[in-house]
Figure 1 (cartoon, rainbow, N blue to C red):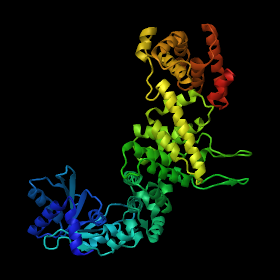
Figure 2 (cartoon, rainbow, N blue to C red):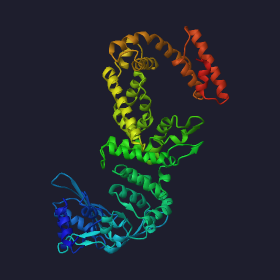
Figure 3 (cartoon, rainbow, N blue to C red):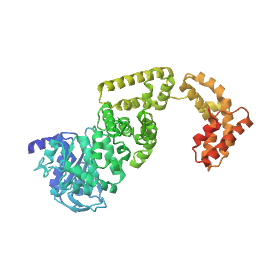
Figure 4 (cartoon, rainbow, N blue to C red):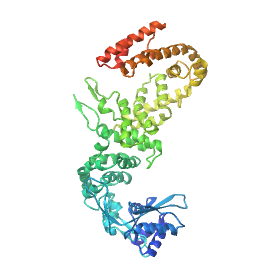
Length: 558
């Protein structure tokens, strides 16, 4: 590609008029200015780019040029960051997009081993490019009027771009030692651009992986989020693992590695299975870069859907390997993982946790003999997430046998047919109870409290079990039937459970279970005698360090 071709590509950018203006102001001020980094890389790839980094030569020249360009463009304010020696202009373009031009004087940096804060010195353009992460990001294009479009590529970045290689300008350990985040960025660029990481880089990543400890979690997670938003998300996570870093960031995922064999029976490697599920899901949701929010968080659910398996893994002679309850264990792990990674702990985390908890439930509905009640309960529990849940369930099919895959997919087609049938009758998606708590209080003549909750639960359970239709009149009839028992249990709860000291937690759980859900005998005195027996048994068992759940079942065996 010659100088004329590069100039043509530069002129084809939406930001070209801005770059011309920068060059004109730089020439007027006697400052050399170059577009560098990502804008040059993406220009040569003929890929869209939003922001432009500009390097100038001379101490303070970047800030001086930014202010001059802002004035030239109609009095725009240059946002100056003195501590970094940078300035930025944010400019709304004709198409409505906002372009950001960032100006910085060429510099070279040196780092202490224990810190990410560099010592900065003025530098030549070559020295500035040399300090950059990868050769494909270490190219510059002049924006000066007399050299507009001249490409400077001292490290072979254009060739590496064509070959789709990631290589560092300096020895890779030196590059990664300066900023360990570059190791994760390597995986991110590879996932975004479908590049191959040079083996020397991979070796250096393994040697320097321990230095991730000096990075803030926020910086690490920002890169993870970009990997997850890429078309090749699984490739990015696999590269992080090959570089010896994933076990330091997501040990719950690397714990899935390995395929154990006992008595000739072998389970699959759940780490590679997980990456395949992520692949399947990305394809199923449109293979998009930067997908919509729900599809993005669905990818996190795919990555974490089996993290409960190592703790749940058991070998049962005559049966083989089982992972019973792994979905519940995994769901309980999600909040801790999100908190550690500093991912949002709001409804997005709850969405991921819910999908992890439910991802095995549709498998149980494949049986033709499954009841409508089981279908109703899954529709109720999944609510508006049922479609994404089924995407995850289908992505979870990773067999290499095409016939087996087809058989599973047909089975899940039948499950979705059952959903449609039950939904048509019972309208359980986005379920709302036929009567609410306010109406219950008015009709029964009670305040908000335990009795209201018991009545609401009774109506909901009856609808899910198919005992009554999801209709107002049926719910009112059941309200009339259960209100007396609910009020009685609520009064007994206040008299017994609420009087227990907080220190008797295990005892209170057993008593609460008995009062609210146990088989209470008729009559107040008989009920109190029963509750006291449960409490005494719970206290005795608590002293023997047995779970409270065993206490309750011992008090009223079925």
